[in-house]
Length: 132
Image (cartoon, rainbow, N blue to C red; front, side, top):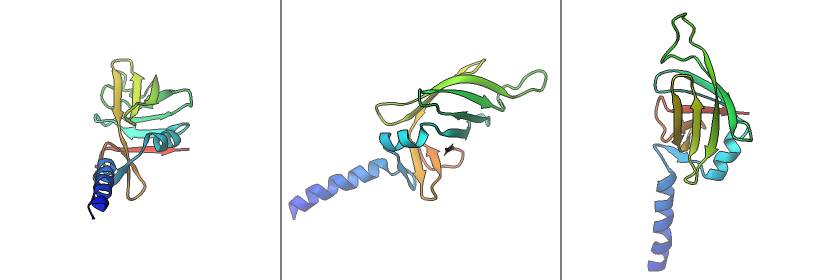
């Protein structure tokens, strides 16, 4: 009986490590398959809609409706080059060279029970879309 418990407890602990708020964290390989070549859309913490396509070489050109800054002429759209990668921890990493500031972040991608994707945990406002 002790041998069974020794094998079951690590399995339970390992599952708990990848389950986040009713979702499952993607492994690095799952993430690579999902994001390579995918069109990406998400809303930043400032409320700006961001869009780009992850090129296989790790580059992209991002566009934004730029809710944070806008412009004196009332124009809000912006575009800037960026890069994406998957780090050693299995996080999706993004760097965008916006004109006024650099955007740089890494996050786990979590698949919710409904099939949607989220950054770090299944919470409103943390959604991210990947489509091919």
